[in-house]
Picture 1: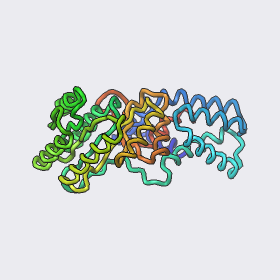
Picture 2 (picture 1 turned 45 degrees about the vertical axis):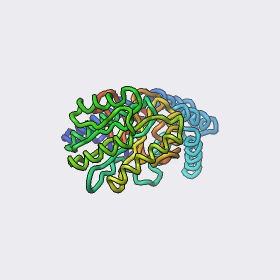
Picture 3 (picture 1 turned 120 degrees about the vertical axis):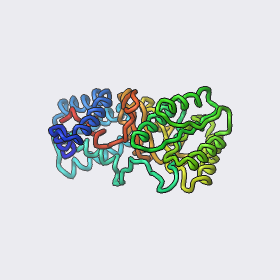
Picture 4 (picture 1 turned 90 degrees about the vertical axis):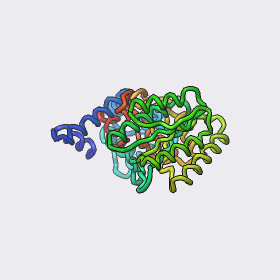
Length: 329
């Protein structure tokens, strides 16, 4: 299929751009190995077990997809679409169905939308990016890694510690500030909105390009968190019109369907513009990328493919699909 041919061509070239692209593809390939081993190998076995398309084949395919954490609703819709294509295109061989499976999973993610995986930068004044998510998903680490990425691209970045009550939260973001070489605004046990106010005043006075704001991760009491985020949004909007420009929800990919529940909960209490999936390399349930888009209709903007500072990548659906299915072809 076209996507796989495209990547094969890249591997046969040696321009500077192609070498960089190869490294990115290999990173996806390596990070999705656990999912691929469980998922793609089972699909291969299934095609060998059933040479012809049958109801039994579809039942086992459904089970494989659910085990990869693609999500029950997503899988049901997907199987319906596959069955329609089988009927319409008179497909009998399961070997011929492999490409259609990849094709339809790609369609599920794209869903006729223009896939926006880039940060929505402000045309004037600092761009404000709010990070939300439950405790323990790697929110502060994500902020540090994104700060490093933006600084390497020539942006002047300010970090704001809006998670003021969790023990060690301010110190953790200050440590990242030292590591990437940028200023941090934070104060323990202070009102988060007042800390954000101070940070934005500094950002405006000192001509920062981007402000990355950490927030508390308490989802147990939705009402309190909603009020806190509403207050933050009001403070930000007063100081910088149309801000925050992004609200990114950080989810730990290893939590699977629990991550989707978190996405639904946060979507109810604030306007989420994108998702950061951490620890995608540490799970065999990489199908969460497809499920999350289908279930909550929020694009994945960044994914964590390893521990190192430069292992947080802008999400690329083509590289993801290639990394997931390359052993099938």
